[in-house]
Image (cartoon, rainbow, N blue to C red; front, side, top):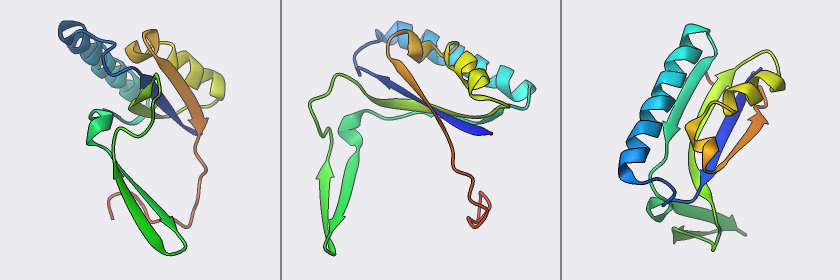
Length: 120
């Protein structure tokens, strides 16, 4: 089953030198997951200030630049994995550096066979 692990954290939680170490550790984790056939994709996200929200109500679109709300944590990145169980996804999340200073949210993906394959 496919799971997405969403990393939420404060944007200033890492000093620059610590962030580069955490990023390298995350990259190594991805390589380890790939060796086991569990890695599908992962990426850190740009700061919330670079985001845009689009909301359509009654046919009218509203576009708002970020950040959007006064919240303690923002979506900082994600890991997309394929594992046999939610417990395996939890074990992976425990190894993600971002979970040490933020929160890892794990959610199973809904598999839709009517979607086009990736890359098309």
